[in-house]
Image (cartoon, rainbow, N blue to C red; front, side, top):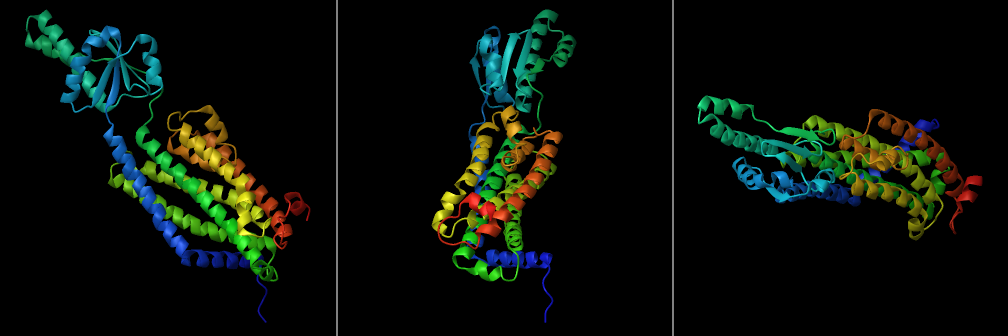
Length: 397
């Protein structure tokens, strides 16, 4: 007579069953290939789009507007793509801050000042350096009567005053692309595999398989094994997709930052995916236990789906243009929103260490609470068939 299986062994057996079933399915193979293709395609398209409109916008105050033609000529000489326009001083800095201008030139030809939001791109820096040296050269030739030594010394010493409106961030453009990829992958993976948990619960309930399984193991063991097994499959697919996306980014030069940044962001993305998956998988499993037909799944899980969609839409809409948005920072520490928002903020390098720590701590506590809450609902509702089980009825037992 075989010895009874312990709690850990029961959970492991259920998880292994889920892994074998999911990996062997045609759906897993198709979605794995499709996800990799979509991510790689997104990286390539983003690279092509960014390269098709690379001209940088430079505004000139009326006092410096006469220099615009000379600046355009210099920009061509140093391989910088620019467009220039005259902008009044009342709105110049505002347009820089809002991203309408890459740089705003004020002052006089003899005393130029360049205003940027965070940092001056290297090609624009080269163009301005050549411009002010050219201006100084012309002035010194006239003043020094053509003395080569005096002209050379003055030209080498020429510079312009750079004033930033916000602290510079390294590799901000590629970080935005990486943040978008991270946000999309985490969002899709949590939504897809959370729904898979629900469908699995409802399928076993409708086919009466769950009744047979619960003669050998406890409800919480079945629930935990199912969540962990599907989670392992999701993690493998997530790692595969991230690896393909990062490789595509470096092969196409879409990422211009060190590989350590990409790998660090990828690790955090996987961490937040796991947190988000565990958080929502228990919720989806509990909601799935309330219904007996696949047709009722959409209505039962709609509230959880909205909690995933809303922060994702807010993140991809606001964070690329406003990385420091205060509301996004606050929401990224709210446990149900954190899995979608925090990895994007980490990719953009705007999440403070204490914010990440708080978000992680609160999220882990939330997972523990949801696991207990969901196990109670699952235990009381999974064997009930027929009409949808009311949530409060499932909680009471």
